[in-house]
Length: 291
Length: 135
Image (cartoon, rainbow over all chains, first blue to last red; front, top):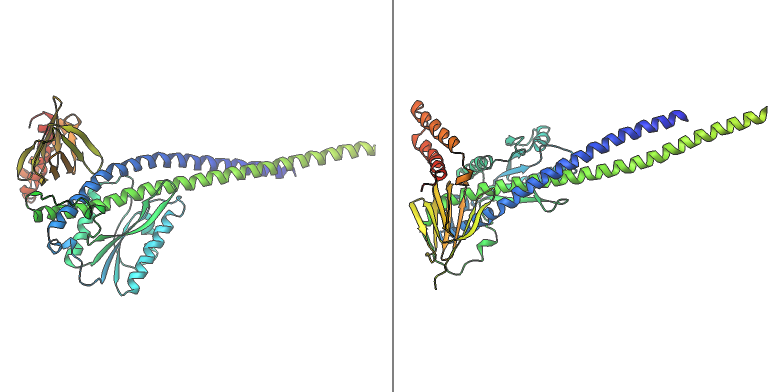
C-alpha cells in the first residue's frame, strides 16, 4: 500500500509538470494571437479600400478586358491552395482544414476536373507526403512565423500566371477564417477568377463619374493582381490568428484536464495513505492485544 | 458650397498610417505629382513611388510612399499604398546605403534590367527626400 502512495505521488508530479507546460503554451499562444489579431485588423481598412477601388474600376470597364476577371469557358483544371498550420497541438485545426481540402478535391475530381494542390504549412505538406497519388504543384513550409506580403504577392503572381495561360481554370483557397478566439470557420474561397469584390460592388454607386489617371483599363491592369495578392495575404493573416486561437483553446482544455486529474489523483493518494495508516494502527492494536 | 477641409486617409496592408483633416494633399501620381485642394473633382489615380505631403494646421506631414492608388473626391482623399513611412520613421542612412547598393548592381552586373533597378531605386530616393523634408 505504501508503494502505491509513492507511485501516485510520482504521477501527480508528472501531471503537474504537464499542466505547467500547457499553461505556458497557452500564454505564449495568447500573446501571439494578440499580435496576429492586430495585424489582421490593421489590414482591414486597406482590404476594404482596395476592394472598393477594384469594384469601382471594374464596373466601368468590360469584364472581358482583364483576364483575371474572366470566367473560363469550361472548368476542367482546378488549383487548390491549402493553408494549414506549421505546428500541431492546436486541437482539430489542421485536421479540419485538411478534411475540407480533401472534400473539395474529391468533389472536383468527381466532376471530372483535375486538381493540383498548392500547400502552405507543414501539416498539410506532411499529410500529402504520405499520399503521393495526388498532384502537389508546390509546397511552402514555415512561412507563418513571419508573414511577408511579398510571399503572398509572389504566390499570387504564379497562380495568376497559370490562370492566364489556361493551366488552371479556377483557383480556390482553403483556409481557416478567424471568427473569434475560440472559433474558426473552415472556408473555401474562390480566388480566381476574381468574382467576389466584396459588398462594395453594389453600393456606393450614385453615378459619380471619376477622372481616371491613367485610364481605367490601365489602372485595372495593376489593381486586379494587387487585389488577388492581398486576398491571399489576408487569408494567411486570418489563418494564423485562427491557429493561435485554436492552440490557446486546446492548451486551456489540456490545462483544465490536467488539473482535474491532479485533484483525482490527490484524493486517491490521500485515501491510500489513510488506508496504510489504518492498517498500521490495526496491526499495532492487535499486536498489543495479543500480549 | 465648397468643403473647407479634406479628410485624408492613408492605408497600407499593415495598418492605417494616417487619418486626419487637412487643407491640402500633394501626391506622387503615376502621371506626375499633383496637389489636391478641397472641392477637387472626383478622381482615381495611380501613384508611383515618391513623396506625399499632407498640409494642415500649420504643420506638414511628409511621407515616402510606394506604388498605390488615390481616390479623390471633393472632401475625401483615400490613399491605398503598398508602403508609407512618415519622415521621422525613415532611416536615412539605410536608404542611402540601399541606393548605393543598387547603383553598384547596375554598374557591375549588366544582366539585371537597369529599368527595373531604377524603379526600385525610386522608392529609396523618395525615402531620402522625405526624410530631409524635401518635396
